[in-house]
Amino acid sequence: MPSPLPVEWRVFADADRLAHAAAEILLEIGRQSIVERGRFTIALSGGSTPERLYRLLAAAPYDDQIDWSRVQLFMGDERCVPADDGRSNFHMVSHSLLAGDKPKAAAMHPVRTELGTPQQCAAAYGAELAKLFGVTPPGAWPQFDLILLGLGDDGHTASLFPHAAALKVNDAIVTASPPGVLPPPVDRVTLTFPVLNAARNAMFLVAGANKGAALKDIYQGRATIEERPASGVRPSAGKLIWLLDQAAAGSASITR
Ligand code: 6PG
Image (tube, rainbow, N blue to C red; front, side, top):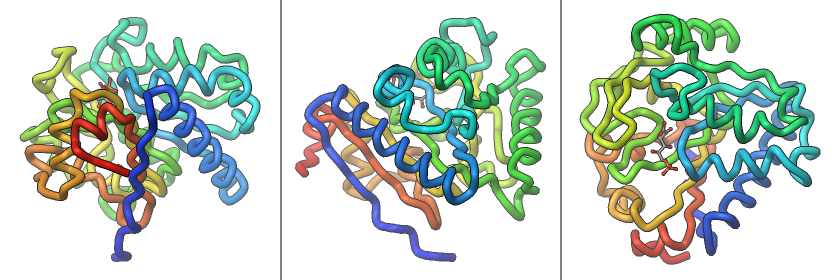
């Protein structure tokens, strides 16, 4: 197993500057992926911080800086609600990133929440990913060019919540998970740790002082995966980037 690359931590004055930096990094990774492999595969996150990034990407000047017809969009996690429900992550992506004329050319692969139970939806999405990436887990995992992630106040990421059974799933690409303590109180479907850690690049977007306690534990290396699941994201051969705004960094006593 190769050693993980050093983690990159960057702090920005505010959430807006953070989103601009995220857009530039995403587009750079995307262009490089298209050159090297002919496509750019991204797992999108829900949450308010990524939504700001998606709105930027949907408009000038960023919308013109990549060939969207070579971009494949997936969901890193989803809430088990209909696609037109305001709580759906796909709904948010549709009204931000995919509201842009150019990003509409991307291939979008939503979680099909209408298929049945959370377990059935997870199994179907896992099967779709296995096919599209041409892999059979647990021998091989989809390798996303970029996985975007957020950090919950409680230290969760994607829909991997503290102490949840989903944290231990290591034989499936996608798993179902009951709601955590933070809203909305709906079942989830989420990528598992083996997939997050197979990524070529994983990028956290973290804004707001409310993230301070979880962020501090992770930054100082004293978090357990059970307590702060986001600390379990450590791509084995890929790059891990944490983008923070000053409010989040300050409240976690991170100075850079
Ligand atoms: C979701 C997410 C979740 C989110 C964090 C941070 O479905 O809610 O994917 O993991 O990224 O809760 O969200 P904010 O950026 O809104 O703080």
